[in-house]
Length: 333
Image 1 (cartoon, helix red, strand yellow):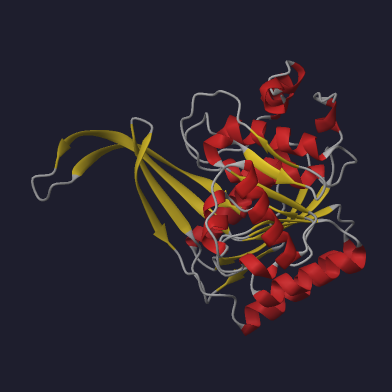
Image 2 (tube, one colour):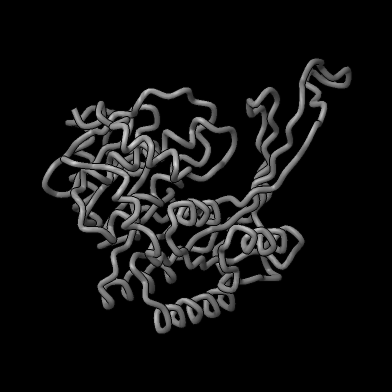
């Protein structure tokens, strides 16, 4: 199979309706060289801090990095943290007009404390409550407005179980996608795992699969194929991708099941790898390319961001270089 950087050029300008939970990622960088006299805990000497776009907003960054055109639909709190997200999005060329602000829910913030580029603590400040009746009604009206006024190439549902993707919202999206013949990619979490019926691409990670099916599963091909058959029988999805962390990705397109192993890299941080994987995989749904290309690109993107500290987006220039240098060869042997 011939696979090179030209496949990335086909993704330019693809319009992605991205729906899911956005959040603010805060990073506190410092040095630890002593233990507190007050309690047996380390003391961080804070050197710097920064805020980054997280959750579905980081998926939007990955889509922008691949030169696609994301339409981001989400809800944040009517608070300073929500405003910070709204201020950050345009600086990356992402439209924030479809981000609702609600006075009834806080904006999710994940604060990561790092010393010597190693994460030592994460603090989550959030509400996982589903959208209330008023929020849900406004959200669905905005969703219908987008469907009526935009040409959508693919829908991406990015679920972190923070309340945006309720059963009602999911049903509305999937019905519209069927009616309009738009492919749907899903990155699920635990609570809504079995709600994404008849989606095109379903991409759980291995732990989510283990916790959601009624029998034991391991990372060998036979076991993953059994799990895939069970999931596909329940959801009726076209493609199943299971991310396997350092072991690569499993892909079942209904015709072939295969594990695509990772390429050798120096891993700094696994945060954000799933975001890059679902971003490039959803764009593959808009192209007439072999599913094998999806598996290879997913591995390259996920591995690339693991080389960086913190949640970052994929680097298209590096990705093009790796494709043209056949960096992925070991993944297709």
